[in-house]
Image 1 (cartoon, rainbow, N blue to C red):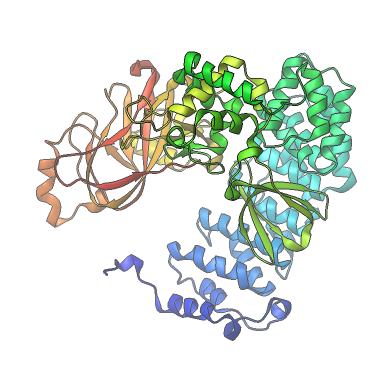
Image 2 (cartoon, helix red, strand yellow; image 1 turned 180 degrees about the vertical axis):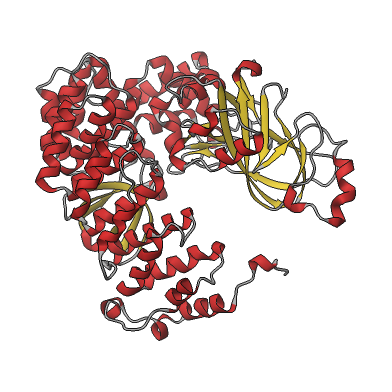
Length: 630
């Protein structure tokens, strides 16, 4: 087997990897690690500056798993210094420090306040992902000196909401009584929702009894809250063992409108929770039945007949895709969507209609072992739920209904139980009967040969990312080579996921729904993984109003494309002329994972949907996979 030069390990890294295979000969035990006088091989490598950037993550992970407190101090020093590591590696180092504190109870020697250097001053440009990782470390280390800077940053009007939310959440954990009182004041009196909601969300997790009447009062107002605001506040209450009861009591004495109560109930079910007291209070306020009884045999037969006679699969797909129903948060179709529940592309070929009806109405009645939910009550009063991803004697790793994975130290679990489903069991009572019938018809058609939803091999982009928070640089005219660099460097929180329909089309109206104000220019991004270098053709239909890039390289939608820049060498120059005669969108794909970026000018586009397919070519076909997932 051949290896490229970039894939070869340097001798120091080989030595390090060999060392990690014999931990007893190299590392002291965790119990004595904090007093070890010698630096570990991994830290010596980090300090040498000889580790290639692509290998830094591996070395940092080793330090996090086995390093001493002195080793972690070196990692902290480099994570704080913006010149020591690239941005992505700094984030990796901070997450590693947080994991070491959580799972091994090891923190660096020296002054933990040095991490405050990562926090920006009010008004300064903030990197939300980097700050979020730093705040996770600050809360695990209980750096109380951060309270003042966090409050200043959180209340500055120029601070972006994702950063404000992270700051207020951290303040709730380390700010003590003073921080709690200030969050309560902001939640009640804040001048805007961008201040009140993050403060209330932070307070609901740290002090649910104080937050509950504030939330009930807010939700009782004339203005119906957004689903996003409801979810951010609700998550905090559900994270504490006393939270659901406190919120239910407050709702019972408030005057929520039926529409608002239904929205809160829908979000509760979407998270995968059905806490009895809270469901009762919300169902009463919403004016609907509290419990959805399992269907009888006669009811199932009547529904089956209705699905066959009146069910519409096309309308059912709309029900499935409706964000309020949260289906795509847990389930994937054609590889795109959540990874918590079963993939549904072929569900219609393996599950009869009566099974589908029962599974949606009573999810816990048909849960396979690998999808069963575990609920854990921790020693500090948190309630955590998810599907078990990995378990050892020291830790349990869970995946929640959002698809996020998190680790719980086994020593912090006071009580646990397994059983039930993360799928919301009360969702059908928030649908009309016709919506439910259409949904079942859609599911029953998935994968069936000869139908509109039969399995297809078309390489269409099914999972897209939308740049919903474009960097300010994109608001001014600039050359395309600068534009694509700005887009590629946009931080992760600036993007939102959206999914194509089964046939590969992405409705533009749904894309616009991701924005507060519809933009004239939309940036969308998909990903492909090429395992066999060769040709392919990006088919977007008419190129009018579209610009496309493969990574930073433009794709000529109206003519041939030269090979990607890094692939051009003397032996390939004779191919460049031939490329110019290729079909529109045809290009050479090198091995690796690549981003496909589309710029859509709405004034020129003129269509109501987008479909991107990597179509086969006659000769030299590339071997590729469209990246799906959530």
